Amino acid sequence: MNAKLPLFATAAALAASVVSAETWDMPVAYPSHNYHTENAEAFAAEVGECTGGELEITVHPNGSLFKGDEIKRAVQTGDAQIGERLLSAHANEDALYGYDSVPFLASSFEASEKLRAAAEPVLAELMAEQGMTLLYSVPWPAQGMYFNQEINSVEEMEGIKFRAYNSSTARVAELAGMVPTQVEAAELKQALATGVVASMISSGSTGVDEKTWEDMSHFYDVKAWLPRNTVFANTAALEALPAEVQDCVRSAAEAAQTRGSEEAESLAGGFLDTLAENGMNVAEPGEQLQADLAEIGDQMTNEWLESTGDKGQTIVDAYRAE
Image (cartoon, rainbow, N blue to C red; front, side, top):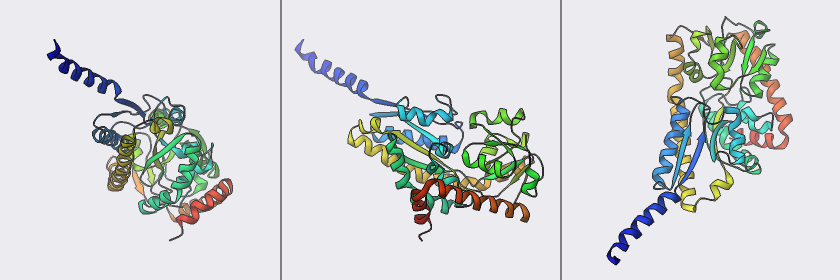
């Protein structure tokens, strides 16, 4: 009888370790084949490996657990422990969230990384005030403009139904005389197919994901900005983890930021090639269109700085310091 006690003790210890394993839900807004989601899956796998299974993160793609516009709130309230969100979609809540969507402020991958680093202290402080911890962010390719007709000037955009995904895209539409409608990524294809919207600003990646050649004919590579998807955790949930598990989460986040950014840059040109191969007219904006958009960019930069005050100016000054 006594000889069996060590076996029972071992089994009990194993059962206790399984019970004590922490599981986190990670809602994301984009489909499983999107590189942001694939990067999130790699991040989750790396956390699991680093912690020896002590923390398991389950990624829920394509708004399947929480819709895109619900993710930030879900993490704040603890309904999800971690999530990925395009934070600029919350710029109506605080304009600082739109730092990465100021038109023509940062129009390359190198500039986007520099802007991210400049904004990180301010953004992390803002998120901490709301009970969240910033972990990493990854850019989309530069944003271009999609239409179902040739466009040579802003004047020709008058009255076109436009898909907005944050306040910056809505403001571009307003200044160009278009009609903005907020549409989340998971509903975009249906909105295009049914004519709810007929144009948008987005990356080549989104264009390929949504097969936009089925609904629109022209893509103008205006390189308006490089929005970033940001991954963040509920601070209370993160701080409840053992210190060594927290270290694993942060190290995996650092690797995910580097890996995802490199992947975005490597894929960018291929996305535009795919649009062209499927019949879209892919082109640089004409001289008049470029000039018109530059005027909109200047106005929106001034508006953003006015709305964010000293904190916004701190970001821009740090970004332009070198």
